[in-house]
Length: 407
Image 1 (cartoon, helix red, strand yellow):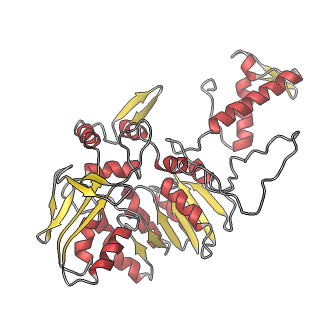
Image 2 (tube, rainbow, N blue to C red):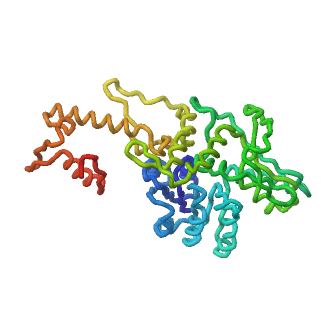
Image 3 (cartoon, rainbow, N blue to C red):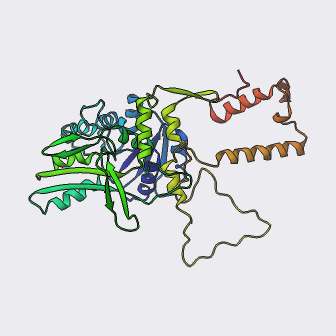
């Protein structure tokens, strides 16, 4: 089975790590807007080779071409891209899976999950399967409710509660899943199923102290927008009195998000200047929270060793071997808040320092020691230091990202 994973954030990276060991999988294609997030996993040693591509999934033509030949498309990008990716998967005759759905495009409009479910007949006619909103919740929560309801004639209520004991120094509250999806969940008015219809509720409404089992314990939960409230009454096959979803929320964080939205600051088009760049305020705000996959890696702590084998002894004269940044052996490296591999900048600065030391020993002038108007003699001609950088960049990468001094 040929699998394509779109979106290599925390969930996409975890799925790639799991699927590379599945005997049914013959190839893995990772696609992400940020190429480095996908390429860092290609060096993982495993039974299945991993291919990486940098691509904007909004480019429908390029997306269809990239996933052609795949048997399964797993969409772990943002939910607002679900419909376009589903249509591309259907076009190339690939099965489809995603973990969550988008809210309505406008207040009072049709929920994104129903727009996706409307494509069910097209997938069925093509002999394909599409599993939508099949994550933990929604997903496993739906399966658990269905399993319990099959033993009953009628269901008085389905109450889904979610809490945790996650904590990080310096944070009183932070999203436990995709920051962008969390923001969307908070900004979408929550609903409850009651008296045979969906009813809107206000954010942070119907607070409830819920006694979670240890070690979570009792926590205050609030209504939040979630897919199960919309889908369970329609597809469970049993009369249901009430369905609601409550989540442990920090009221101050929710109120801050709602206030920023009312001021228009969370609109994608609202830009602010940071340094010499214009960036989206929404993106800058979300970057203030820790990236989910980085938190998961921080809890890993140790690398297991095989039993019955002693660590290999090395001679004192030999320097310890370093793990290559592009060839991780076990779990993939964690990403920083920008979605990139931490430590790359430190390694780059260290390598530059080594090159300067080598130049000094050989009597070669280094670029750092030369002024902006200096010229370096090499290969029979004189060139500016920036000119050398530009030429070498083209030779190595096939493309040039210039320094501020090169015009």
